Length: 454
Image 1 (spheres, rainbow, N blue to C red):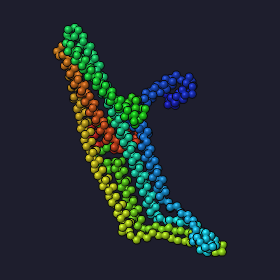
Image 2: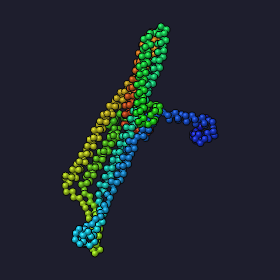
Image 3: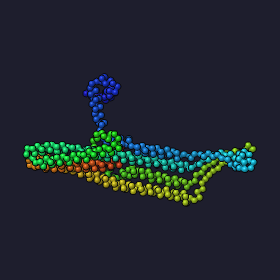
Image 4: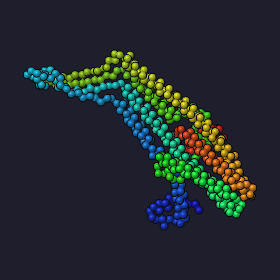
């Protein structure tokens, strides 16, 4: 029977309002089933959810938002005229004689009030506003860097916990098998079919597994602590399925063009634009600004009041050693910023290229483990177990085969973890804003990657 969606919603509302008994029985069953499945899904911590929580909790992101707002506010302020200056004063006040300290009897004494306004050129105001706009853009790029770093570090913490728990599960599985072998060895020893050395060997193997389990329990605890730094209390929740680490969002054939837009390179590019704007401001400063002053002077009642108007213009009499030097300094800073960006891009391309090569090699090795080494180790264990049951080999041979299988599976998990960590560092060079980090691919995968994934 098909149930319309609105029936499920009606049932959920009925639960909250206390009218659950009025809902049909079939709808009650369906609603409870859906709520149970939803609750179970909500209890797991997927990689995408962990990254979302980490970005939401980050104060660094909030700090960058504040920096962007501050720069934009300053851009608006920088485009305005300076505040006018109010001037109050007394001019030519006598200090001796019969009119001393009188502001009304002497014809030269004036009480003054005036206003002075500086008029920077519109070009300068516009350039100063652009300088802060470039600073806001740089802060936005730094926010992108922060988000990418948060997603990357959260993914690394999540993967560390995932593979620590996976390795602990392998050890626990093998410990259960060894416990059964201990029972069999003790039974064989009591009936005279086995030796006491086999019993000791089995117990020794179990003790070694318990020690390794203790080590990986410590790693799990440490991984949870690191993950909690990013996601908070949710770090204790069971983890969801692992992401697909066989493809990345970068086009490995076009690293130069992709990495030219990397957030860290973008920050350096914005710094270069800031330096260029400051150089243009220094160029504009070679043209002096001027200011206007209007003054009203009041004298005694027997004398006329006066108005004064003045214009002030700085005399740039030594531009060669002042304005030109400042401009040369700003132009040199532009070249410095450009050189630093180009050098950082070259270094980044080299580092990422090396990581891509290592990631691809690890994937190849991992395929060898999955298709050859681990199956052969399992077959060796099965053969040793069959030989042991048939009395053709000792328990020691079986334990050695099982230890070899354990080591092989743990080595494969270690290699898979290293591959996954490289994947996280490569896949989150750029922030993923899709909410599904391992399902979205803003950068098309290369043909080699597509073949590998198939």
